Amino acid sequence: MFVLDHGNELFLWFGEGAGVFEKRKGQEIVNAIKEQRNGRPKVTLLDGAAANDTFWGLLGGAGPIAAATPDTDAVAATAVVLRLSDATGKLTLTEVGRGAAVKRTLLSSTDVFLVDVGHSVFVFVGSSCSDNEKRSALKYGHDYVGARVVGLVRVVEGFEPASFTAVFH
Image (cartoon, rainbow, N blue to C red; front, side, top):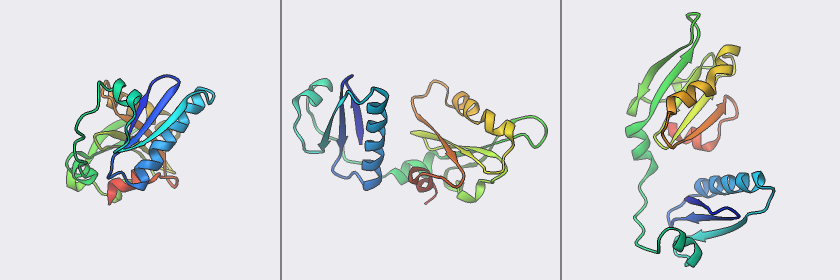
């Protein structure tokens, strides 16, 4: 799934193997952009085989489309979980899991966790974490991401989106 933002024209392209969650997330992204721009952008939905001269022209012309790669392989190889805790009186960020060792059981309600899956960094805010951890969560996430171009997603315990829970399956 790709979103191409061309000002007042948004293109949402789905590859042939796009799943329902990818399509739903793509629509959420496009709707959020459209809402930020007071509903002005026109949205064009394209499936993998659709011919659209404007879309392909903006990308430099139509060409061969690479086959999809399974998300689970990339996540298992690159996933990192870090704990943000002030249990010692000072906020510290510590790695608690990497690669195949990344499991949902690493997360605790009493702290904040950064879950880096390569294309996105989820900032998991435990329901019983301290106010200091809550206030600092996104700042630490932003600092961790640095100049990388990835999504930074705040996740509140009990309201986890499917894209977050899928990391642990």
